Image (cartoon, rainbow, N blue to C red):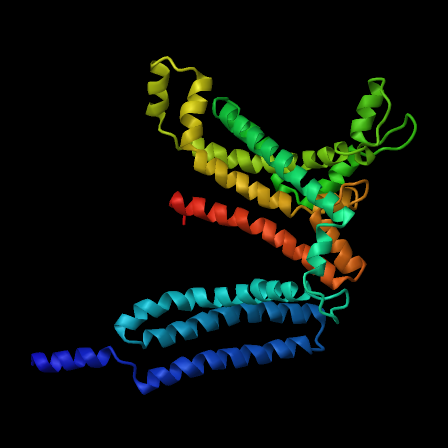
Length: 366
């Protein structure tokens, strides 16, 4: 009796030919079926609204059918393999999609960076050498550094200050709502808003809010965005601070509320002042949060594009790496140089992301 049970257990741990066949055919059928549907939609003559509606239905039904069919196949596996494979069934399609949309285009961009403008002649590292010797690129890199240093510092310091002060205020919810509100606005919309604030025209009649205020105070209107360096860049950085301070404030506020109250009360009973409590207790406890917020905002500043493009178009010495990438690739049709700029931007962002991920792992968030 024990021998037969042992044999049945061993047989249940093996793959049968039927299961192996299903493991091959079901993914292939999914791939073939959805490829045919994709080709149908791409060449369809249906009205655009009907085509869009059917595409949405296909997307929802297609995702469900893929996960359902793959999960059904894995349910036929032996028990010891079922637990191992099932996580990959649910994560695998997402990883493949990300690889298709992110990893492959990155490799394609890296490949194009080693060729000339029309991608017909291999030039090696000539584009990379040109990036760091071109005057416009040196200016763009300098401006990006300004965004990283001044923009990040201002967002983090103001966000932390507002979080601490609002936590002690009876108007905490209202104050946080007002500060966080710009986060609901896109960078493009923010650029349009602030373009009217900074708007300049000769004469006493000013429609720009900032110039209207200083004219009424008896001063001359200023062309804020065409000022000499570094002032016009600093005025652009103000927009980032206006938008991202709310993000920093919310994260810091949550971290501060997680500090044990008895720890703070014990410090106060020992005679510690509020400033000392902040620097000796609060800041060390939330240091991992400060680092995470800082690295996140650094990534925003390194990729900044919308604000600069809307406000100045990269003129008056305000160009950044992203605007130069756009100009080279889409305006000048220089695929080699534009791809190189994209790779340079990617290389600049990667160390910050790695630092952020390591900090999240250390804090137990991943």
